[in-house]
Length: 64
Length: 238
Image 1 (cartoon, each protein chain N blue to C red):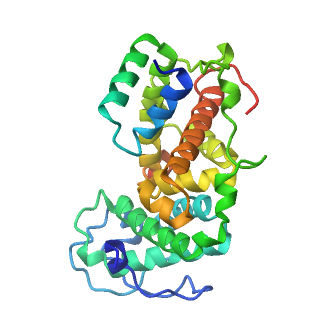
Image 2 (cartoon, one colour):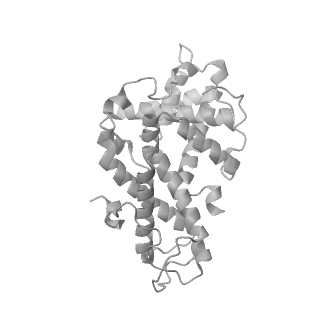
């Protein structure tokens, strides 16, 4: 069973590489029972969305 | 040759005059952001003092400066990117995506610069932990690897709405700037320049595993900084 530290490492790594089937299952199981890591994973999505906006120059003051 | 290199003109010397005329737009300068670049308007001169151009330069400079941390190099990259954009504007067919396109060219200029200078960062600075290398995230977890009570990530209310608020971006900038320089560089190469970890590893001569660990530290520290300073968590020292 993953602990939170390992789970968050996988939440980050899934942005950079394809996780193995076992890793995906372990992460899924962990986030089902751990709200904190489920939050962390959603926030990694949000962070990716934020950096994408930044690199495309789509910040609110850009359109002012 | 990497695909992005085909777009770029030869390097332009530093101190290149802003007033240099490159081409013009058939529409008034104030319409710059909505000009139709595919209309084939006759080239004349571009007004570098136009507010829209100035705003674009300012945003590009902010972006380049974060990546390069060198004012001169950032100025050069922005100048070269703008000139490349103007030269190739005939090939550009969508007005709403103009900024995205100009930023894509800027990104390529920054990547070229980083490639030339990547070896100047000693790999040991990235791999071996020191006081200023990599935000320490170990203290967020208990010995058994579970979150400490005070560092558990909370639910963020409506994060998407933050993206349209200028103040949020100021906090985001501050949080990125707060990352240790070497960690920030790897993070920005991955997220802002959109390079794959393989390429980053090659450029910086570090292993994939090291790269993933550095990125994990960077994202964890950023997440925490945003929660503490924007998403309503109790303020805590970083």
